[in-house]
Image (cartoon, rainbow, N blue to C red; front, top):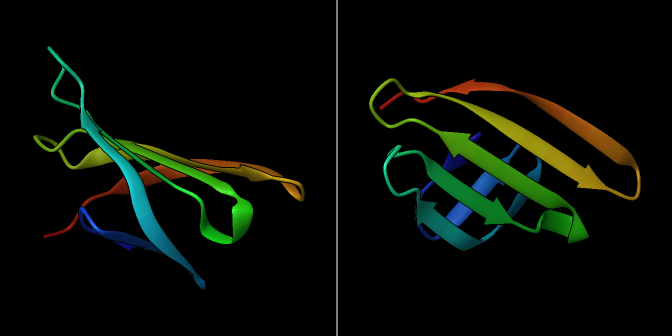
Length: 70
């Protein structure tokens, strides 16, 4: 998985980032994209690099954890 403010790549899926939001107070960053009409949400803490992802759509839903590497 790779992302920046413009695009996100999740395995074989890639799409433009539709929303990049920093939460007030917590500093968490939320990313939303729609690769192949699926909903991909990534939320992570830039201070620790730890976060979660959720991919949902017609085939079902999956979720997991992510650690950001720079």
